[in-house]
Image 1 (spheres, helix red, strand yellow):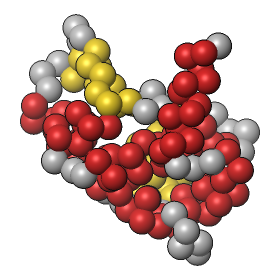
Image 2 (image 1 turned 30 degrees about the horizontal axis):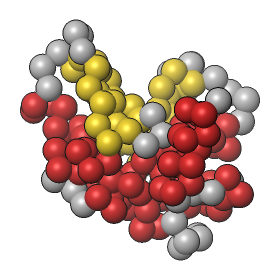
Image 3 (image 1 turned 90 degrees about the horizontal axis):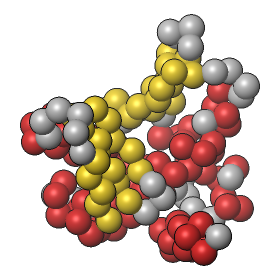
Image 4 (image 1 turned 60 degrees about the vertical axis):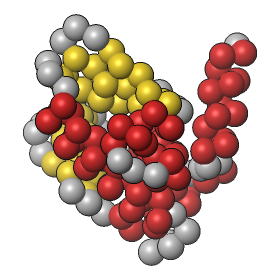
Length: 144
């Protein structure tokens, strides 16, 4: 296993679990959460809330560094699931505990561990897996 991204993926599990705890206890009408490169969004039946890493870290009780790492790993997963499932179609994916669970459209589940995600990040690292890289990408999108 590549150890290069192990700490970042560990932060991903921790923050994902913190988000799940937060939305289940604090957010009425919760529908789903996601990220938009450098922001966390929480959607409810009536409103979308958007938080930068600093706001989200305070809200979730995690460090800013952990939140930044979460955003980087989530971006990698969001854009590279085909590295795990190839051309198969999926209904949704989610972090459950310390595992990534991808539910395919035939209702079967594929489960991936920290080591799998680290390897995916190594294979795709030419993109640049750092928070600064995400900020640069977000700025490029805004400039276009």
